[in-house]
Length: 166
Image 1 (cartoon, helix red, strand yellow):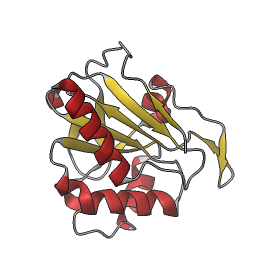
Image 2 (cartoon, helix red, strand yellow):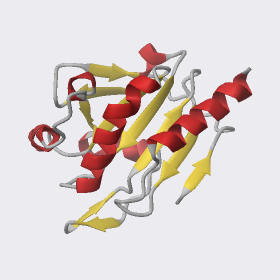
Image 3 (cartoon, rainbow, N blue to C red):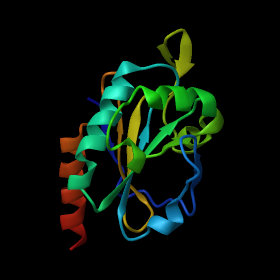
Image 4 (cartoon, helix red, strand yellow):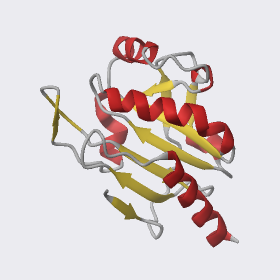
């Protein structure tokens, strides 16, 4: 497991904008102030672990309403649409898959790349937790396509940061 806590990070991310590849929605970080936002950076390419990870979060996310879950892939819109059909989750309609063209947002967050997967060089899978004030409070960068922040680990981190704000 690779975990890096960056609670002291002072960068204000202002207004991140992402367009969905699976519906007509747009995510804007500015509109989510006051709640936690979990940015899930999924791998480019077909990844069965991305599907498993995303489906698991879809199923459990309702138990953590104070966290907005955002799933991000750097693939083309058509690739994301085809990939999302494999999720086959009844909760899928509540969670658009957002597109990060050319991994621009992954680069902004300095998520390392150089991971070889399915004949491509991709960014490592990661989850970035943004606090209610719009600043990054925690990050988890996996070492491989199977190394992900579990839902239960995310819950523990949100609870930890919620208590520290009181």
